[in-house]
Image (spheres, rainbow, N blue to C red):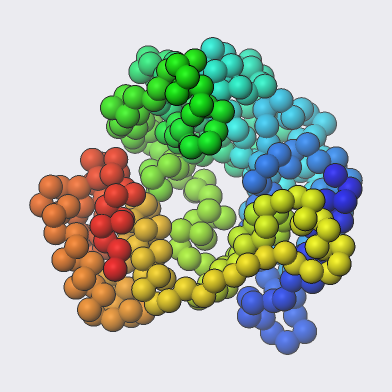
Length: 352
């Protein structure tokens, strides 16, 4: 753990700048996100050391959003107060389900009671901005239990929720067990129905469906994740972390922890990079923007990529407009509720 933290701090210090700033001034950042693993297991002293390194390198905006990903079983009153003292003002908690049977099926170590207790602890500690993850579409989750999971969110007025359909990736233990008949396969029709039910329940409860997988009460959408979908510049530090200069250059670090630590010990950042063509930039913008409730801004597309790009997008969208999976409003291309079931396929069809 110590070697990892040392390597991370070194990367923060030696990474070249790409966000413009006045000469001699620190770069100002609006969000910080500790994620991609289990940062909640880090001792507070290590988190504090990382914060000090970041504050030497960057200037934090006055209303900076600082999110920490946490496991339910890592959360207690002492940790919550310590995180707050560092300036962490938002949590993202991997609940996944409030059903014990389903949590066991997913090989999660926490229980449903621990999930409920951690939400109460978060609220008692005064966090008014936090998110939980839920998974739908698993073989054990029928519609009535899915409704119970979502009802807890609504009843407790959880400010933000990210919901993902269970996907079975190749070369995973889950995929192997399904192939061997040890676990039941995923039912795509059930997943689609549970997604439609989720949209209906959340809308009725006053949540804004601002991105395919994300719902927020007014004023509680994730500023950090919205930066990704809007193609703003961001730095990523740590194994597997991605960075983007806000224009056309993306870089990413190797995933191997040991090689990451070894490279930084030699003052080398172990990363690769790519320069996106104009076409790739347009395709990526279309894919991410289509997932949001603001959709693809055709005025923005025309200003950056020209009128032909707008014509091409609208031509490609015609079959989906006719089938009512897409609508065009105020020069924006937006998905309908049914269209959201086919977001990835529609985005691919719009690619140049």
